Amino acid sequence: MFKKDFPIFSNNPWMVFLDNAASTQKPKYVIDGVSEFVSTSYANIHRGMYTLSEKSEEAYHHSKELVGELLNCKASEIIYSYNSTYGINLIAQSLVISDVINKWDTVLLGIREHHANILPRQVLAERKGFNIEFFNITDDYEIDRNDFDQKYTDKVKVVSVGHVSNVTGKIYDVKKIKSKLRDDTFFLIDGSQSVPNFTVDVQDIGCDCLVFTGHKMMAYTWIWVVYLKKERIRKLVPMIRWWWTIEDVSVEGHSLMTNADKFEAGTPNIIWAVSLGKALEYIKSIGWMKKIWEHEQSLVVYFINKLREKGRGTSDKDSPIEIIWPLTTEDRVAVFSFVLNNNTNFQNVGEKFAEHNVAVRCGGHCAYPLHKHFKKPWTCRMSGYIYNDESDIKSFFTVLEGIIK
Ligand SMILES: Cc1ncc(COP(=O)(O)O)c(C=O)c1O
Image 1 (cartoon, protein in one colour):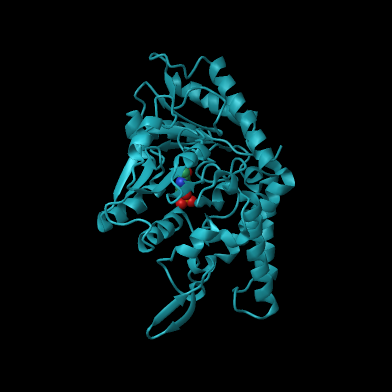
Image 2 (image 1 turned 30 degrees about the horizontal axis):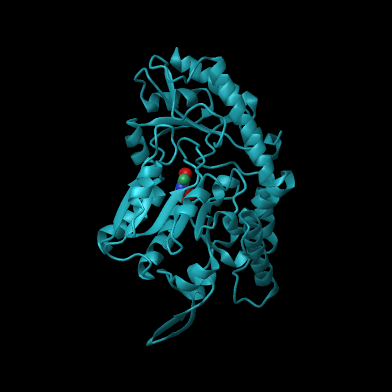
């Protein structure tokens, strides 16, 4: 139904695109909208007093206003960065230089985190002498509450968790995690796999910070969003400083801006920010996040019914395919990872899908600790989005059955 809005599909009519957890395709509305902005309204923003600069600034802020509406926060609590490496590093470094996390303190993460949420902490922990602990998940993929309670000691100053696993598609109850935390624990959510798929309300969750990336929800690459609660913006200081981050500079030193601008050093990614605004306008026009969620849920149900129909994905040891997630339609997005039990390696599986024009992703999905926990070196992942339909899932199964045979 929505495929017609995406030129990539008319230009590649044979392609079945099921790699949306990695990145999504762009609707014509976004492509044309960005092109129009660049053709008619682009200039550098902030201190320009001429019309083009003002138009450009307006478009940049309009994009932030839409993100505010998306997350139920103020536009002034939104910081734009480039990707997870920049965004999570920005906050991770800021927590260290703002003394939220000090030597001997602990950062608590989940074993299922994406590397983007692990590596920035490891680099800083090595140098600054704080610890990192990982809480486990149970055999049915829930948070291991006992393990969490044991590891959430007085030393924990930061808890940083993924909202949805990019491997299993499982949605985690972040509100419940929040209810267990002391008020002074900095609570960061990696919303990379949740914000593109369903309504995420930062007020309702009560988190201090939430990050997500625009390219996974139909915007262009290199637009990464950091929501930072107003009180935290006031207290945290940024590591990277230049131009719009400062109020005054002298040979003795400099003073920082007091609002979220202090985290946006240098010329921001204006064009890609506009692309995110356009993507959000498109999503609004089709029925907002509710529509995406409903559509994805129909894909989830169809996928699971198909698996059952084919007698695949049971916990039976002799089953040729093992799905890394119990076969339930609840608390999940349309992301399914599996391994084949016939020793086929992941490159062969990925290539077989590619030969039949089905785009899936095989490997460790930047979640090696989770794969190690499952004792699986790799998985193959299919992930659906708003433009996928039943025929895409049928094509997926045709290839899968061929590989199994
Ligand atoms: C849960 C999660 N966090 C972070 C990222 C990294 O996002 P980006 O590739 O935009 O830096 C991803 C991307 O796959 C992800 O799935």
